[in-house]
Image (cartoon, rainbow, N blue to C red; front, side):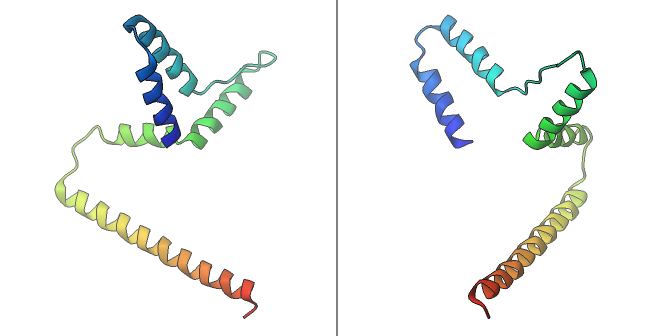
Length: 110
């Protein structure tokens, strides 16, 4: 992700005129999108492929999180959600530590 940002900055610095800048920005935006080709007029297969690619890129999560923010969330609900998220994060980190210690013991032959 960081390399893409650097390329974008270099890309914008190297352009001299606004017209070429606008054209290059459009070209860069087109490269970022998800492209699916329809083969043998099979639209269903192309749609399933597009859904899979959206899921893998994380775009689906972004769309869902944006649609969920359309209403106001009270501060007390935000605190509860933050606490649950923290507990989930700590639990996963604890599980990762346990798995790592098990793997280290197996590698060492203990």
